[in-house]
Image (cartoon, rainbow, N blue to C red; front, side):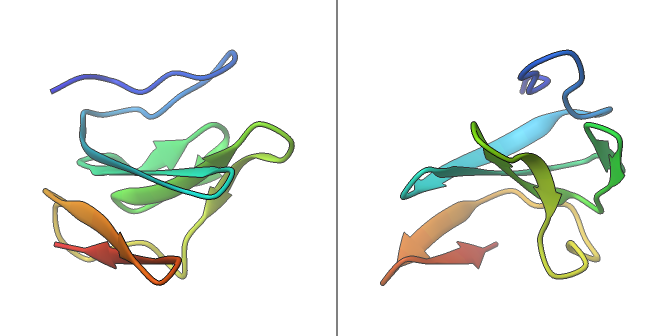
Length: 75
């Protein structure tokens, strides 16, 4: 378990899963913010754009992330 920090601000809680798809890194875990954005347990980091939300996040703790055909799978 670790806190994901890229740039000045990362997540405000532990990251339990990482997955990269193209230039994006998806993080999942137990957090409510990523950077200065509200992010419910799921967020995306891109070096060009910084943090962004992912379709409203996840309603539960994210323990696993995977990718299939360039789409992120959440578990």
